Length: 143
Image (tube, rainbow, N blue to C red; front, top):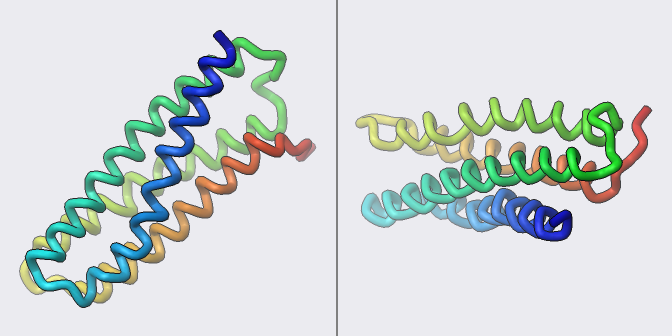
């Protein structure tokens, strides 16, 4: 059972990180895209964020089950660090993408500002995800 949970956990981690690498070139094309194409890019962005959110739920659930079914304690430093970063990333994900994507539909929106904001958010979120991935793979002793 543990190996199946681990497979689910790793698969959901891939689904949580992967879409953001696809979004880097898409966000770069938003500024020069015609309105119809731009809406298609925004649709891809919204779908990717939704996929990441749902994969994150599976990731958290499988992670909890893995810890419960292993020798790791909840107070282990890499687990505590992962949970701390995850808490921040959940808050960040909720504020970084959906509200900005909605503003693209508003008339007179400063699209260059919104694109810069999305680009920055993608890179920050990727950093947070990769940091959590490092904690889970390297399992560093932090204290």
